[in-house]
Image (cartoon, rainbow, N blue to C red; front, side):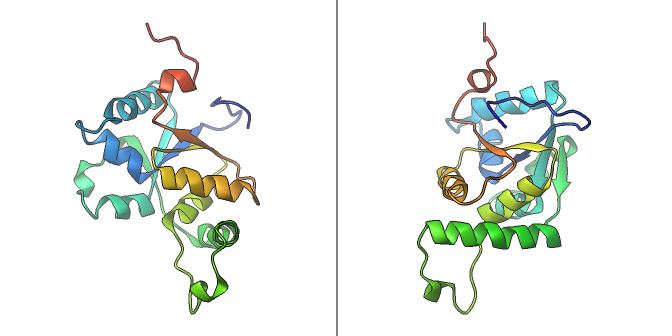
Length: 170
């Protein structure tokens, strides 16, 4: 993919929204609330399918309620065996780039949720973007890019949607 285009032939384009997106969307005092609302509205208007992972739902429910999430506008993506396998590949690359010592991975590695979400986005051919405001996710993605080229890009909601998509905002 080059640039920020959501154009795919023969399939409806979609985005995977992460937990940080929903935290900002649902908190009208958050500094990025307006940006999250604008992205949400843009995706609805352009009929871009918005997806949420069961992983993000679990993360959100640590401090929020599932009833807060706009589930009627979202497609829920469950974490499955294919995602688990791809997660292992992604986590290995990320651990290597972060120079995680092999002893720290014993007796078992604790896999960060970003690796799982990235695997889901990568395996779903309709997903063009992983939408986030989380700096850790963005750093993790940068480390992943050093070894693997995922099939999706990061959309950072700290940048207003009209700048990202080249829309004049009068």
